[in-house]
Length: 266
Image (cartoon, rainbow, N blue to C red; front, top):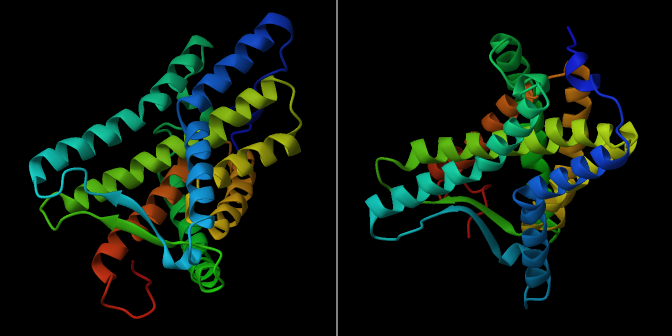
């Protein structure tokens, strides 16, 4: 297994004004993206635990209709949401290009497509099976809301939008929470262990809207993904793995909901 170590360790800690600038940049990127999502998820979680009834009797819907009964307007809103969610990734690319690097330094490029696809599929296969079992167990114990991966109308664009949504989620999370954040925290002088915990806890935080199970499961996934990123020096396989996991969840739910007894529905 070849490691692109340069993508992970080609920086040195900064000092003074440069350090403050980089710290502020990182906080702004997170404030415009997954940091804000973490705060939103926390507020949602507080609302869920203070609501009468158990968590498993409540639902968290991921891909919902934005304009019920108006499919073309709904499609426009869906594509708008997917596109604008990628703006923070473009901002990260801009900052890295300003440094003379670009997203290639994070291993998000087309230089190793088969490596990314092969290892990404392998990781998705392992995490997918254990993730489903963990979700069902957490929900059964009352630690998780019922997750509804999609509630889109049965129109021609339903499955393409679900696939695009899955890819968008994956690109945003892996580029920002793994590649970009680990790079910036290293430049700010954070230890590898502290950076790993920050990345993993951030990943868990913006899944809190699903409940304690969603938080714990994604923290564990975050630890695994940071380890793999440091081993491979590429976020490419992580984006592939995450995309396959979300496509399986979104499309699988759309095909199986109400047809199999083991899959909880709202």
